[in-house]
Length: 470
Image (cartoon, rainbow, N blue to C red; front, side, top):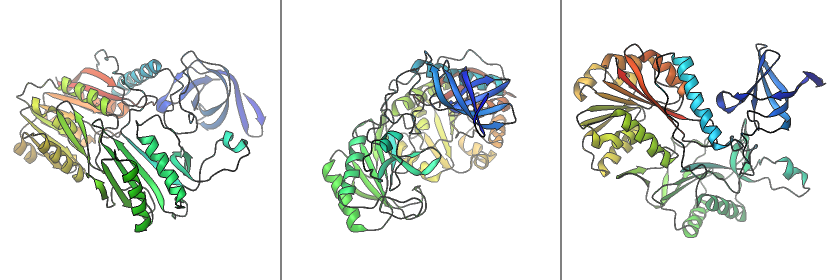
């Protein structure tokens, strides 16, 4: 390790050995583990700058120079790679991404759960690796983030931006012209909305001082062709609001749901705000097999529609329903999994904390003619009591799809008391899933494991586990 400047330590010719958690890379130096973030890949030989020390045996570092490139690399397809916070693995071949995600699941289950495991199935790849998201949010800002290339060309720079937040700099926005995450007409709507706003002299939002007019735009595109656009304004200037919405309505007749929000509070979250329908329907529709799902402005729906179908097929296969089972779907959200399996079950009961999501679940059951599904809102650990089970029937199969934090221990204890024949555990965080599997090992054996890639070019991975009562 060399000191190039005061308090600056550089490690030269360091071999990057593997991936680590959260998409970082890992190397070793003089008995210490070095975690490297950014444009790095296993097999690279690099010089790094040490940014932080943790307990003297763990370093955090960034790449200064690359001496040789890994064979696992790919050419990034997006001009914003390395600056934008999304798609951080564009420089890694997709097959290598899949292998690491599979290995991450395997490591978590073996090292954290420490239970008997079957052979883990191959990961289910995403058919599309670009333009696969059905929802994106973009922020207006008068405080644009400039790249070194932009600052170096000598031209006068426009400080207004419509794009994504820079990682770790919430007040700075990277202006986006083309994003490879969401299919058309996402890019053209965003770009023309920005141009229209500029032509009208509308002030882009100042996040530090909470002033400005144009604040945020949410774009949702469905596999049915439906398009939802929600514009957030930070001031109740109705004349300018109407002008903006009329422009979008006339310029983009393909928008099937055009809505807006006047949000004057200090953050962009809109779940506590009133959404006003300007034109079209108050929802868009997604289809999955013979089912239709209505998605409102505040509804949750998996952001990769095609892979959501693959994920739910795995859950349904693991459940092995014959038409005679009572099924509980925990953390049901808007009831997508519950409604997806209802035709193969005797009855389905969905439980979800968010009351508005349960309203969507009931609507989706109704429009699909599903009469054997019931939905309840409430805290899981309080809802699943003896009276509830007595009223709704003892579950033969439980499907659980909790948030990243996993299930609360009281919920796990309730599952152990209920003793369903099977538990199908769908997880977006295999580390917390592994913790829960260790608790469930008291009465359940893991018999199937299959990861599913929902988010190409990121380190995130979904995992489905089948547990059967011992």
